[in-house]
Length: 305
Image (cartoon, rainbow, N blue to C red):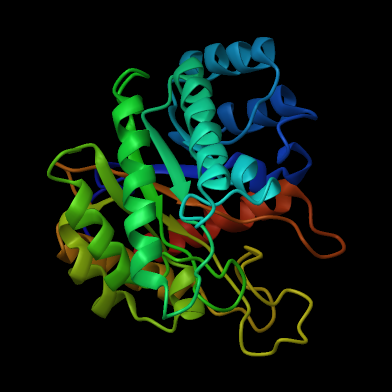
């Protein structure tokens, strides 16, 4: 494709993945975030739980000075507490909604323009439709509250159904059902598609993305290992690109960029955040090496797109 990649998208990285010591909202958050903020390759960053309010406000100032777009991911808070927005237990669902609302307050502190949210566990085909109704209700409550918290985009992230996260959303057709119900009342609601999840879902981007084209707001790139359950990196672990037995390589990232452009999802009039979700997992891997790996893959994939 012609032109700079920055004419088509805002390039981001998921902070708490590439620096996993920060995933629980503590640890060297400011020090590690600064390493991303000082790297002008990235124009956006996805942050998670930051429990200490002073740290959160210092992070917000740093990212504002660095002129970065901020996205907030609720997954660290939700997954670590095993919270479920489509639980059949009303009290459990209430706790999950409350946690997301607390995350929205944090997102406001950080100046986030969008908030990523995962669905809860898939209950199986017999109760799936009922669970989707509960999820829609939870998300409607969250979207209503978000209007009081800076009105960020509320983005439902599509995960795998039966390999790792075992999420209700889940396949793209189920994501479409949810988005169709919420978008008329909440224009800020949309979907996030992660390249690393297509192999785990056994879906192809060129078939799945057109289904939800009207609702897609954000995108991620990453890698996964899924053919051998005995592999130490099996599942949704976000290994670096080029890892042995990985499913996503430079050609796949390049094809993803081309598809997004063909569908009109990236471009000069529409520059969504496209983030890399990668982390150091194997001996000898460091955040710095994984970040350098990612930047090289993005540059080469764009050159080939």
